[in-house]
Length: 391
Image 1 (cartoon, rainbow, N blue to C red):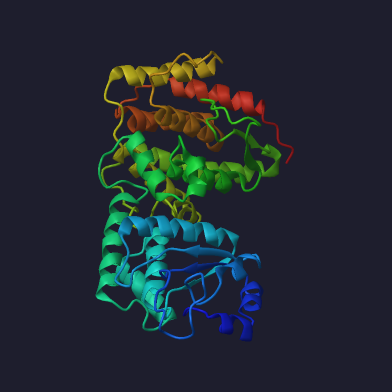
Image 2 (cartoon, rainbow, N blue to C red; image 1 turned 45 degrees about the vertical axis):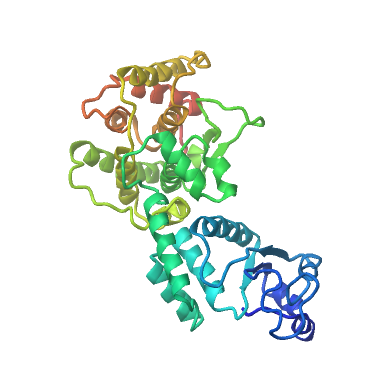
C-alpha cells in the first residue's frame, strides 16, 4: 500500500480495517524524514503518521529503511526473516512512499527466499497482483543478486560437497530465527523427510515427546522420544504403507546412478511444506540425493566411532565420554535409525543399514556389519515392546 497519513488513518478507520482483515503488522520501508515536502507535514516521528498509533492498538510496527534503488542483499535476507516472523502472527501490510517500488521488491524477495522462486517469476507474480510494482532497474538488479545468493546457499540440497557442520551453518544463516533452534543438530531436510514418512504410515498416531529439560541426549537429540499408538492405524494399512517405503529403499540400494533430481524448488525454508505435497518415493529419493551430496567423515576412526556409539546405545551404556565426534553427524544417524525402525519391518532393516553405509560412511559395501540393525531392533523393542493389534 502507499504510505498512510494521519488524516487517512482517522478518516477511513484504517486501524479498524487492519484488525478486521487480521493484519497484525505494518512494515514501513521509508527513511525518517523522507519526502517531507510531499503531502501533509510529517509527524514528529519523521513519518506521515505516528507509529505508536499502530502499536497501541495491537499492531506490530517495523521500519526497514530501504533506499529507492534497492537494498543490500544481506540486509534483504534479514528483512525477509522478519516478514516470516510477522506472518506467523497474522497478515501484514507493507508500504514505502507510493507502495509500488520498494514494497513490491520486498514482497518479491520474500517469494524468492521462502518459495525458491526465480526473480523473474517473483516479479511477475507481484506485478500481476499489483500492476506497476518494482519500478527501478536498481530494484530488479537487487532481486537478481538476491536470487543468485539464495539459489547458491539457500537450497536444502547443496550444489557442492560440504560437511554437516558447514551445511548447518548455512541452514542457520537462511532459516528464520524461530526455526534455527529447532534444527541445531539435525538438518531440517532430514527432520522433514522423517515427519512426512511417519505421517504417511501412522497418520496422526505418532508424536515426539520432548523432555522437560533441554539437555542434549544422543539417543533423542533435542527432538525427543518418538511415541506411536500402534492401535491407531490398522495393521493392513501399516503394512501397505511400510511396503511402499521398503520398495523404494530396495531400489536405492541397487541403483543410484540415474536418480532424478528434485532440488531446484527446495530451500531451507520451504522443504517441509513441499514434502507434504510429494509422493513418498520422491521424498526418499530426495533424502538420498541430499545425503550423498554431503561430505562424510574421511577417516576410519570417525566411522568406527559412529558404530561404537550405536553399540553403546544398544546396550544402554554411557556415551558422554565420546567428545570427539561430529555431533550433527551422529545425531542425524541415530535419528534416522530411530524413525526407520518404526517405518519398516525387520527384514528391511538390512537394506536400510546398507544405505546408512552409503550415507554416513561413503561405502556401498555395508560397513556397519549389523550394528545398525541390532540398534534398530533394540530401539523398536524398547520403545514399543511386543506389538499386539486388536483389529
